[in-house]
Length: 242
Image: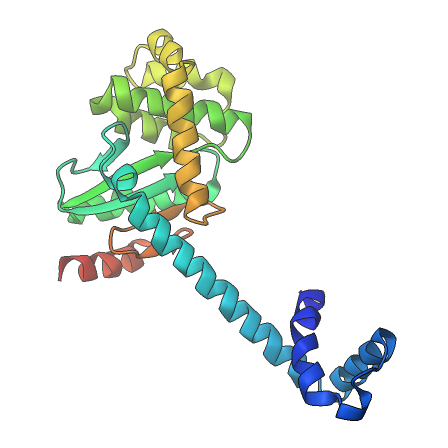
C-alpha cells in the first residue's frame, strides 16, 4: 500500500514541492525530497492512504452495482437454484454459502429462525465450494438435488449444514438419510450440467467482488458480507417490506 501511495503522491509532490529552479533535479534527489517531506509531514501519507481506500471502496461498489444489474436474471430468476422458505415469496434474497464454512452454519441458524416469522421470504441459495474438494463435492450434490428433487433440497441442505465437517466420502450416507436416492443423485452431481451450474455460481460470486461466505444479496443492491444475527436480518427485512 505504501509503495502505491508514494507512486500516487509523486506527481502531487512534484507540483507542490519542486521550485522552478529545481525542475531538472535527478530522480534520486527527487525521491530524497519526497522522503524528507513525508518524514516531516507524515499526515500527508495518512491522508493519501485514506483517500486511496475510499477510491478503492467506491470502485468496488460500482463494480457490485454494475454486476448486480447485468446478472439480475441469473441471480434472482434462475429456476435451477435451491430454495429455502417460500418459493413464491415477495421478498427475495440470494444466499451464497459453502457447507464447510462455520460462519455459514451460524448464518443457517439465523435463517431458520427468521423464516419462522417471515412467511414472504424467499432465500435463493447459491451453493459454491471455496473451501476445498469436499466443499466442491457437497455443493455439487446440493445443486443436483435442487434440479432433480427440489422439494427435498432444503432437507438435504440442512443435513449438510448439520455436519461439523462435510466429507465427500460421507455424502451418499447424508443423502440417503435425507430421503434421497443417493446413487442417482451422485450420478447427477457428477454430470456436466452440475459442473456448469457450479461454475456459473462461482462466476456470479466473483463477479460481484465477493471473496467469502456467507454473503446475502438483495435485488435493491443491499449486500451483507458475512454472518448476521436474527435481529439484524429482521431489521434489514423491515426495510424491504416498507
